[in-house]
Length: 336
Image 1 (spheres, rainbow, N blue to C red):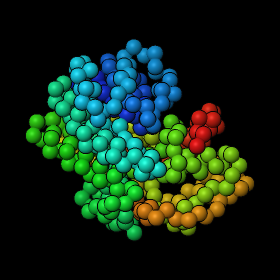
Image 2 (image 1 turned 30 degrees about the horizontal axis):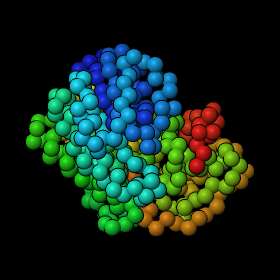
Image 3 (image 1 turned 120 degrees about the vertical axis):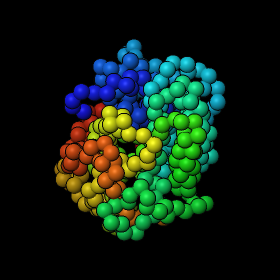
Image 4 (image 1 turned 90 degrees about the vertical axis):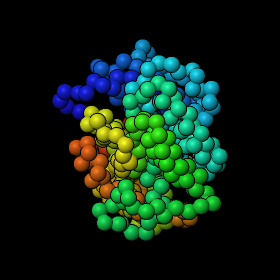
C-alpha cells in the first residue's frame, strides 16, 4: 500500500504460516521496514518450508513446528505480538473429509488456544480466517453476491460438514471470547484465493491449479458436472493487500468477505486456461461432485467501505502469473 504507513503493528504471529495464504502473508510482512518479528506456527501437514524458502534466513523470522490444538503450544511463546492470524486449517475438501475430527478441532480447541495466547500477550488484533463455505449451497446469485448477513445453507452430517461447521463455530468462538476479554478481532471469509504456492498436496477442490496442471501435462481439463457452476477468484496479492488495508485503516470487531466479486463459470474458466496455456487437448466433463455448491460470489461492499480496498488484478493476469509459477518449478512440486 502506498502512502504513510501505520507503524502500530510490527510483530506478527501466523498460525499456518507455511501454507498457501500464510506464506504470502509472512513474506509480505517481512518486506515491510517496520516489521520486527514474524513467528510461524505450523505442523507442516499441508504447508511446506519451500513456500517460505526466500525468507528462511531472515533473522526476524521464527518457526515453531507445533499443533495449535495442543495446549502446551501456549507456553512456548512469550514474545510480545501485535497481530495473531489463525490460518491453520485443513482447507482441501478431500483432506478434511478424511480428517473430520482434526478439521473440527483446529477451529475449536486450536482457535481457543490462540485466543488465550492473544489475551496473555495483550495482542492488539486477533484475525480468524473463516471460509465462504459457511454460506453453504446457493443455487442462484443473490443480489450483488453473498453479503455478511446472508443466511447459511449448511448441511449437517455430510462429507463436507466438519469444515464448514468448524468454521461457523470458530467465528462464534472468536467473537464472543474476544468481546468478553476486550480483544479486538476481525473475521475474514476468503472466497477462492489463488496464485503461486497453492496447496501442493491437493486433490479435488482446487480447480485453478488442477486445470493448470492438467493443461501443462498435455491432458484434457476435467470439468466437474456441466461446468455451469459460478465462482469468482481472487489473486493472492490482492488478498494480502486487503488484509493489510484492514490494519492500516484500524478496522476491528467485524466480519468481512474478502474476494473478487466478478463471476465466471467453471466451463469459461477452463476455456480461458486452455487459451493461456495454448493447450490442444481441450476439456472433458466428469460426474458432478454431490455436495458442490452451485454459486459462490462475494459481496465486498462492507470490506471496501471500511478499508478502501478493491481487487485490482484481473483473472487473466492472475492466471498468467500463476501459470508462470507452475512452469518455473511449481509443476514439479505439484505431484498429486
